[in-house]
Image 1 (cartoon, rainbow, N blue to C red):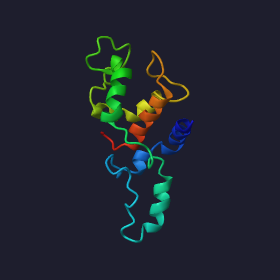
Image 2: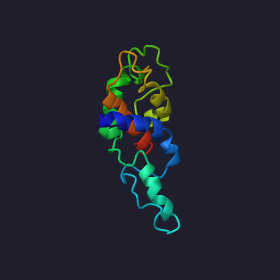
Image 3: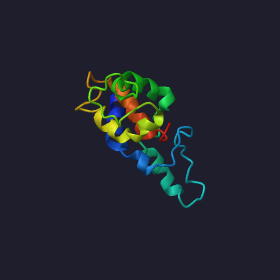
Image 4: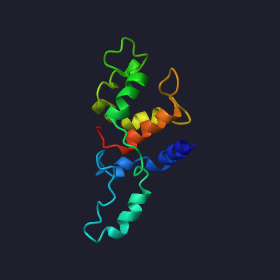
Length: 143
């Protein structure tokens, strides 16, 4: 139940978090001391960090989740070597992490949610949808 609540919170609050917090890295976990060292920004550092919907999210990136997820759920149609692409556009290829990140906003629109459209052969688990959002909304782009 907690996972569902967190997934809903991320869906509502974290959409676009990458554009707002381009300084976040997957290794610092969104360290809360950033910005507080100059004294002037210390009044806003606390609320910003506690309001960050990605602050308490586990590390999810290509190596810990994405590679396996993409292989199992996407590359059947979106690999450059897929024998049958089943209508997938030739330009939408997920062979590398960089290619996945190129399409990250579109992936987030098409995969998890109330009206799942990808993968067409069947939906993904709620846990995988949550991890996908954590990865593509909270991790450092390209990881």
